[in-house]
Image 1 (cartoon, one colour):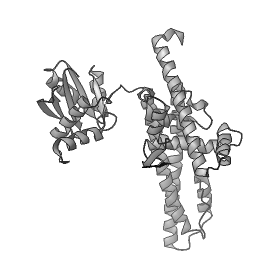
Image 2 (cartoon, one colour):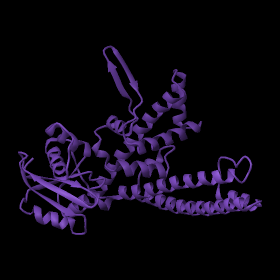
Image 3 (cartoon, one colour):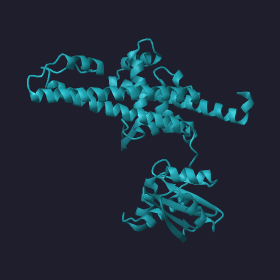
Image 4 (cartoon, one colour):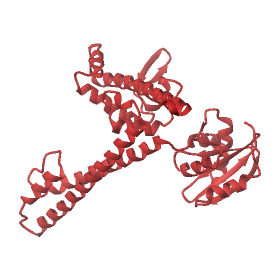
Amino acid sequence: MAGVMIGIDPHKASHTAVAISGTEEQLGQLRVRASAAQASRLLEWAAAWPERTWAVEGARGLGHLLAQQLLSAGERVLDVQPKLGARVRLLATGNVNKNDPNDACSVAVAALRSPGVREARPDDHAAVLKVWSKRRRDLSSSRTQVVCRLHAVLCELVPGGVPKKIIAAHAARLLDSITPPDAVAAARLELAGTLVEDLRGIDARLRETRQKLDAAVRASGTSLTGLFGVGPVIAAAVIGEVRDVSRFKNRDRFAAYNGTAPIEVASGQRKVNRLSRRGNRRVNHAIHMAAVTQVRQKHSEGRAYYDKKLAEGKTHREALRSLKRQISDAVFTRLREDARRAERQARDPGGQ
C-alpha cells in the first residue's frame, strides 16, 4: 500500500494518531482532545503526507464520529477491528502491555498487513434504521424493568399477585379497587401508581418509536418485509446491523456472521457440528424471531420445512436451527437484490 498509514486510537476524551511509512517506520504522532476541532487538527497535522490513509480502530463504534468527519473531508478511512490491533501488539512485543501511542501504531500496522480490512463508509439510510431499532430495544428493556418492579409491589398488595402479562390500564383498575389498611400498604399503593404512570409513558414512547421505525423501513424500499415473519422491526434490526451486504462473499459467510452456520468440531476421524454462539447476536435474534413466527403459522413454508426436519428425526431445536439457516439464506438473497437495485437507481436516477 503506497503512502502513509495513520493509525488512530480513539477515546471518549481524546484521540491519539501515529503515522507510519510502508516499512512500518514511525513518522510522527499527535494527541488531540475530543472536540469540535478534532478533525481539523488531525488534517492540519497530516498535511505533510499528501498520500495518506487513515486507519481508525472501531470506526463503527467509539471512533465512528471521527471517521465520519474524516470521510466528509474527502479522506480515505479504514475500519480496523480492535482484535486486529491487539494481535499485532501481542505478536510484536510478546505481551499485552499497552498505551495510546502503541495502540495507534498497532492499528496502523494492522491496516498495512491485513488485506481484509474494510473501508469505512459514510452513514446512509441503514444508520437511520439502526438508530430507531436501538431506541426501540432500549425502551423495551426499560418496560420490562418497570413491569417486573410493578409485579413485585402488587404481590405485596394483592394475594397471589396478578397474571404474568400486565398492561397499564389493567394495573390502574386493580389499584383503584385496593383500600390500604395501614401506612405501609398506602406507601406501596402510591409506589405502584407511580410505576403505572412510568409504564404508560414508556408505552407511549414505544408507539411513537414504532411509527418512526415503520416509516424509516418504508423509506428504505427494502424487500425484506416480503419474507414471511419479517416485519418492520426485524427488517430494521437486520439492515441496521448489516449495512453493506457486499462485504459478505456468499451466503455461507453471511450465515457465519449471524451465527446460523454450525461450527465443525473435528478430531481425528470424529467430526461433529455444534451450535454456533458466535456472530452478531442481534441479527441472530431477528432471524430467530422470524423462524418462531413461521413455525407458529401452520400454512407457512417455514412450518412445512420444520415439519419435514422433524419427520427426518431432528429434534425441535435442530429443526429450528435448520429453518434459521434457510431464513438466513433468504435474507441474504433479498439484501443483495436490494443493493443491486439501489446501485442501478444510483446510476440511472431517471429510470426509477
